[in-house]
Length: 229
Image (cartoon, rainbow, N blue to C red; front, side, top):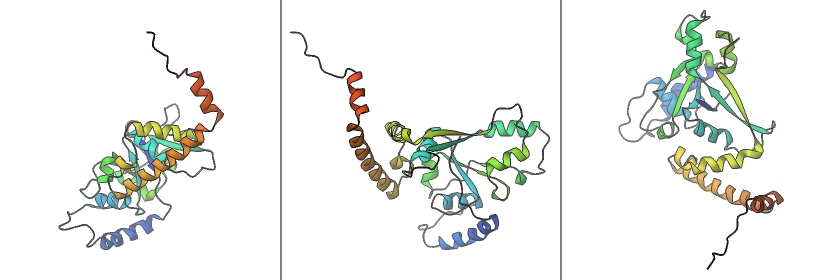
């Protein structure tokens, strides 16, 4: 399971206050006869439309997560993009076999797999699941507080991807049908896909002008032979 993005930095109490406001603001905007949602379904719906929530958004698919980690064209200060990987199975196994430093489920990481609703096609298309930590604490800071990881494989780790590999990785993902058009089944997805297609045209033109592109073509012996008659 790999991370897509972290929640916005906002206090836990602020998130609690924003929740009823969001529900009130959706009145008349959910279509005719909207279905009743539980709290987690409300948080999930809001998350995928830009609401600041206490949920941490993940995907079951490493390819979907890789796409989200790379889609920004902004050059990170570090020079690389990051893909976070989390194993809830490993966390659970360690947690039940070690002396607990928490006394209830509400004081540990909650795994939310069923926060789905008809209006949230995005979470379905993205294979979305969520984690919830006490008081919205960063998961990478919370795990060492409740687990002794000495001698164990990590349950949360980061894969660094150089910015120079971004376009190649995105092109491979797009060949597997992982792109904005499939992950955002709405008009926003259609617009993002068109923007990405324009970006691909620009990067391809730049590649063709580079010496390395010409050298690679020549090294692959890509040419036609005249058939013998």
